Every structure is written in structure tokens, then in C-alpha cells.
Image (tube, rainbow, N blue to C red; front, side, top):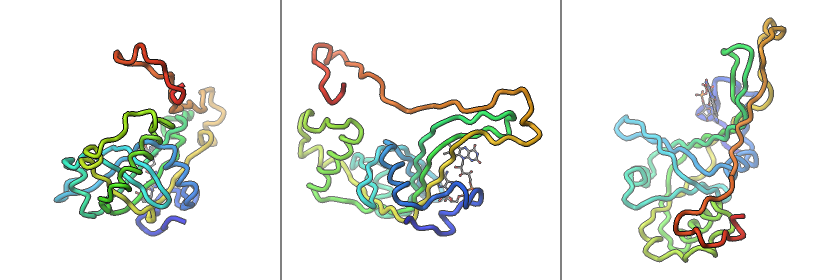
Length: 210
Ligand SMILES: Cc1cc2nc3c(=O)[nH]c(=O)nc-3n(C[C@H](O)[C@H](O)[C@H](O)COP(=O)(O)OP(=O)(O)OC[C@H]3O[C@@H](n4cnc5c(N)ncnc54)[C@H](O)[C@@H]3O)c2cc1C
């Protein structure tokens, strides 16, 4: 289970929509490609979107060793990482009752910098294969210099929460008879057919991209 404490317990729907189940969290983390990392420097908040990978009870991000944001958090100052998957717009009979069906995740953690070459190399493979499955062996092999100029940060997934809203709109009892359409507008996130760039016009689409 994830750590439920005052920081990871919301004031609203604390019992209905929240989950601290690790498998539920893992499913969200493995479907989402991107997260937003928030941190604060001298009382100034920053929130930076970035790619990530989960491995067991750890979450990994990477970036240039020169990145302002990675250098700010590599020393282990507190961060909050959030992830959301949006499934439907929930259209009610009143503007007030409009909502969203979503699966979201919030994590409080601290970075540990990973400098081990093999661990970094393995992470780059995992991240690449998460974003474009089965592509690692097809690509030009990663160079040692590319591994060296990229920073890898690891976060423990412990103090975290999941929130899920699913289902139909919830209208006021007195609005239910109104002749106003209500329901769901699905907004699926999906991969469409790949589009070749100029350099690839004559290169066959590899199996893993079909
Ligand atoms: C796509 C999307 C759209 C949303 N739109 C709105 C909106 O327009 N208005 C609105 O009020 N709310 C919206 N929410 C819900 C919002 O994320 C909060 O859950 C909600 O505002 C309740 O806040 P709170 O004050 O109860 O939580 P807080 O008391 O501020 O939160 C305390 C702790 O609860 C946990 N928590 C709270 N919310 C979440 C979450 N979503 N996911 C995971 N853990 C969480 C975190 O650990 C957090 O630190 C939206 C959520 C999503 C994903």
C-alpha cells in the first residue's frame, strides 16, 4: 500500500474516490508517459512536465546534466510529482455539475541521483521502450557520451495517493427531468498511424511501428 497520511489525504471525497492501492497506482504510472514535477526554490514554485518510467517501487526521470530543473532537485529537496489520465468529459444538466472522469496520482518524494553507468543505460532502454515499444534494438546504439551527459534521478514511490472519478454525471434531483442533454464525451488518448519525415520517405515502416 501507498502511505496514507495528512499530506496524501484530500479534504474532498477522502473516502469515495481515493485509493492507496499500489497496483492501482502502478497501472496509472505504466499507462501515462509524462508527469509534472513541482518543487520550490526560495519560495518560488516551479512545475515542469517531463517523461518518466516506473520500475518496482521507484520512479525515474532524466534530462541534460545542464538542466536547471534537474540541478535544483538532484540534491534531494522535496518534490511533488503528479500524473493524470483523462477519460471523459462529464457533461451535466447544469454547469455546476460538469466534471471529468480521470485517473490521477500524486507523489511526495525526494530525488536520488543515479551515476552508475549500467543503471543509466538500462533506464534509457526502459524509457525508450515505454514510449516506442520494441524500438531499442532497431535504433542506432546509444553512445557512451550520450549516457554521460544525461542525468538520471530516482524517486521512492511511498508517500502517494490515487484519485479516480468514473461514471455518469451527477445532477441535482430537481434537474433530472429537465430536457437538457447530459452524458459523457470520451477523450481517448491513442496512437495514430506514424508519419514519416523527409529522411524516411523511402524507408519501410518497421514492424514495431505498424
Ligand atoms: C483532469 C482533472 C480535472 C480536475 N478538475 C477539477 C476542478 O476543476 N476543480 C476541482 O476542484 N477539482 C478538480 N479536480 C480534482 C482535483 O485534482 C482535487 O482532487 C480536488 O480539487 C480536491 O482537492 P482537495 O482540496 O480535496 O485536496 P487537497 O486537500 O488539496 O489534497 C490533499 C492530498 O490529497 C491527494 N489528492 C488530492 N487530489 C488528488 C488527485 N486528483 N489525485 C491524486 N491525489 C490527490 C494528494 O496527495 C494531496 O496532497 C480535477 C482532477 C483532474 C485529474
